[in-house]
Length: 358
Image (cartoon, rainbow, N blue to C red; front, side):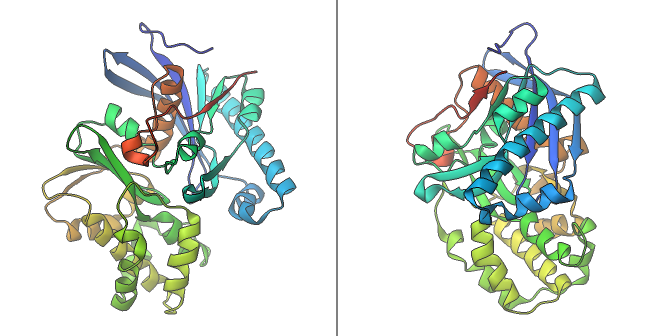
C-alpha cells in the first residue's frame, strides 16, 4: 500500500479527461503536509490529444451496446496506462501513485448513477503503478451529486483566493461559506457548447474567442438561455452532457443562428451567469481552457467590473484539474475525505475512489 511519508511527502500523477474531449491532461506533483496545511509543487505535466478513433468512441459511448461499452472501458484503461508509461519514460520519473478521473459518459445523480470509464486495473497493469480511480460513485450512492470534486483541492491548495472558478467543459465555482463549510457547484456549460459549434465548422475551438468577437449577440436567445430552470435551482447541483444536449443545443439551434452569432451569444450567457455567483470586490482564480478565451474573459469582466479575475501561469491554468485529481489520490491514501457533503449534498463527507494494484 502507498503510504504518506512526512519527511518526503508523496508524488502522485493525476489524469484528467474533460467532457470537451480536448484530450488527456497528465500532471505529476509532490504533496507535503505540515499540520493541516498542504503544499504542492508541480514536477512536470503534459497533454495528449486523443487519436481520432478513440475520440469518436468516447463521444458516442452513451449510445453503445453493453458489450461495446464494457470493451471501451477496458480499452481506454489500457490506453491510459500506456500514456502513463510513456509519460514516465519521457520525463524519467516514477510516481508513487496514479489518480485517474476517467472520462464521464453518464452522470445522473438523481437516480444515483454516474459512470467514468477507464479501467483502473488496466492502468495499473500497463503502468506498474498503484491506481486510485472511480472518485464519484460513493458520493452518488450516498445521494450526493458526485460533483464537483475539485473544491476540496481549492480549499487546501488555493485558499488565498475568495473564489476558484474553472472554465472547462462546464464551469464550476467554489468558495468558503459562512460557518466554515466549502460551497461549490456547477454554473453552466462552457467549452462543451463553444467547441460543439466550432467543430461543426472544422475547428477544434475558437482561438482567443475571435469568431465570437465577430458575432452579434441575439438577445431573444440570450434571454431564453438565462430562463432555463437549472439556473433557479439551489445548490448543491451539477451538470452533465445530457442537460446540454437536451436543453442548450435545441434552444440555440431553433433560432438558426450563424456559428459566430451562436458563439457570441453563448459567451455573453456564460458571462452573465458567472456574474450572479461572485460578490463585488472578490479575488477570483480562473483556470481551465476558457481562461485562454480572451473574448470570454472580456465579457466576464464587463459583466462584473468590480471583480478581480486572476489568470495564473499557463501550467496552473492548463493542469489545475489534473493536479487536484492527483491530490484526491493522496487524500485517499491518507484516509481523508475528498467528497464534501456541503458541496455535493451527500449524506456525509466521504472518501471517494477505488484502489488497484498489480
